[in-house]
Length: 481
Image (cartoon, rainbow, N blue to C red; front, side, top):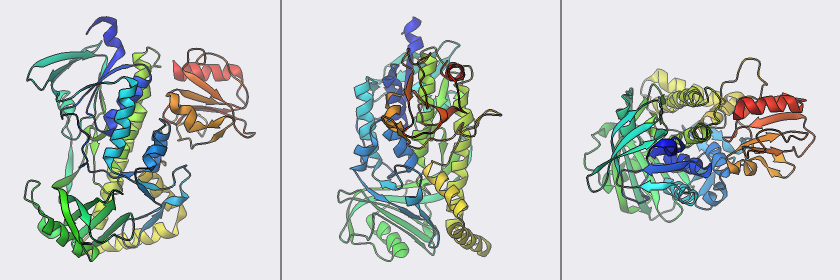
């Protein structure tokens, strides 16, 4: 593939949730996309993630998938991180004031269906073995199931291929960090006795355990025993899972018929850059962290939502100067914040030192009695609290997440489903951007006078009070290219 066709193509490596959402977005925007996956075609029911937070549900709502995903699991409105620390999700300023407990494979199923319907080409059993790039594109060497190596060329490549990313290695980026927890255990089991809630979590002494219901008779168990930290490849049987669960929760609920048993260790790592030339990293290829707070899959999906519309604009020749650089500028600090918050929770939970235990008690008490602190904690864990940097002198809304506001004809996240910018204005606008199909114009449901230009990922690009047509046209030209 060469010539002008190359400039309109993107290759995404990795068909997990991050890669699927990104590829689906690009194809929906009219970009030619190939998705390369090392594994055979199969959505595994043995994936680790099981919780979908509010901000991710909002992003899925902007793609018409959230309501269907809600039918696959159960919701909870409270998170208990330590025995005395609880967070009330029902107070979230979102259409989704809860945590959805559903397995990752349900998320992947919907995202894969959307990607296929949008025209994404899938290449399974294909492994990246080499990468070269120049000023005009990227050459990717891919070895197929038959052992033959084929070179594919694209305008851009995105590595969404997990913590052992072949793309990250090919562009020479380190993945610095540390191991936080050794020898976590995972199991999918059936239970003779039903736990009291959708999610059961507790730590006692040197053990920790969590049980989450998949809603179909299977339960995910995750646990840790400080006294038995062994390598990931050490044998694991159901008796060990039962023992950890009994120590932490007081009962093993009569677990039986394990369909999957696995050990893994939890690392904190982040690539120093998310972009090298025409190659980008997203999801676990860019950052991994402890499972505390259930932020892993969610952070990756939000990486994809941030990057996809920017890549589409670049491929279609309408990206303003610096737009692609803004991906790393916006998402790298978020990844770093997630590493800090999830790592801090793990260190407090594991605390043996009396001073750290006292600190944990103090944190728990302070969060419970200080609403601003609880709001910040909720915003970080659920993803709705993050905002992106705004230019000096910009309107206070610039860079902030927009909630699902009511419009004269519907609501914002329905308007975002076309993957375009949305201009919400008290007046009218028929200038550039509308004619090209890059911009949707909506009116407030009420008498609000602020004009807001909302990016395809649901963040404010620009806002003004009492803006006239010339001011709006200037802003549209600046942000839509």
